[in-house]
Length: 338
Ligand code: NAD
Ligand code: DAU
Image (cartoon, rainbow, N blue to C red):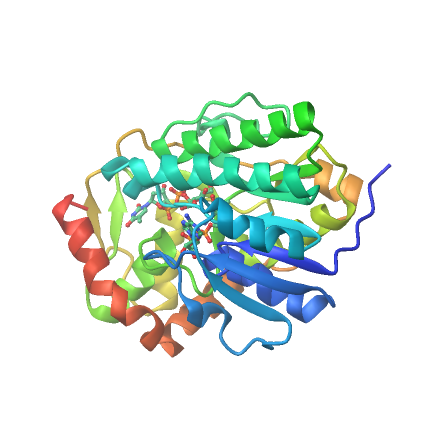
């Protein structure tokens, strides 16, 4: 038995980031729901990501999810909060964990308190990294039953935020759901992340950089499929439940890099091996049977080569979007030997 929910208005936190903005586009294109985006516009947030959307349906409020006065103003105006805002990059969390504690843990707590106060539905967007990692030769995948075992400051703060959501549901009756998704790719992803970093390196004449032995496996999903899954869970998911989101996209980093090099006309060895990430998770893999069988969700972007080619084309066509932040991102990596 699923719960049915038909929201007319949403507060989307982090809606100027990579995945949050994809969700805002998805909601505008596929539903009648109106959206307030609450985004602090950190280095990772860009208002261009939601530019051109109808202003009578999407309003941007620049602010912090830790600002309780602001939440007191915004949360009563909507039917539900969909919570994407986070510090999201593992390497940054190793260099400086503090903002991760503040936004990912305190920010989630503040939103939960506001949803409790105003009796609002809450959907928490989380990551498969809360489960730690799997061995390369292990046939297992993560399920909703897998014990939490996060490795990095980023994933441990996301795990903490998931546990807060579970506690606020059980103790205070907050009407919450949680989703844990695998690695997203697609347009509008910050150039600090693996796939856009390598594409934009090649476009800048810099060699792609591969960590460690390159055999770490990630389970890739197109961000539009993540968005349709979150909408499905928000509107049909059972309150108090967790759903894993994935699209059977396991590939190791070397394979992904080879695909990028081939698609961009470069030879297969035209990249640098660089220092590994401390604590680097070996493999992620998602079993999304529950989401597929209980809620009937299916991914649409099942051809990774095509999705990657479209993503490469997007970065070719949108240099003015990524150029302004590319140099600073590479300087940060270079200081770290990566
Ligand atoms: P991102 O870094 O691209 O965007 C994060 C957004 O949150 C930015 O717009 C930023 O300005 C905003 N933000 C940060 N701190 C804020 C604060 N205190 N108040 C308000 N806004 C704030 O991240 P992303 O990759 O789009 O990830 C979005 C969410 O999805 C995160 O919760 C992340 O944990 C989760 N997730 C990401 C992936 C992935 O592959 N990128 C996979 C699974 C889950
Ligand atoms: O699994 C979901 C998670 O995926 C999300 O929760 C995170 O927000 C998101 O950033 C992502 O985390 P990863 O650490 O897996 O993503 P990242 O793009 O940083 O790295 C992907 C893989 O590529 C990882 O094994 C590290 C490797 N890598 C990364 C960079 C930036 C390289 O080999 N070279 C690089 O230059």
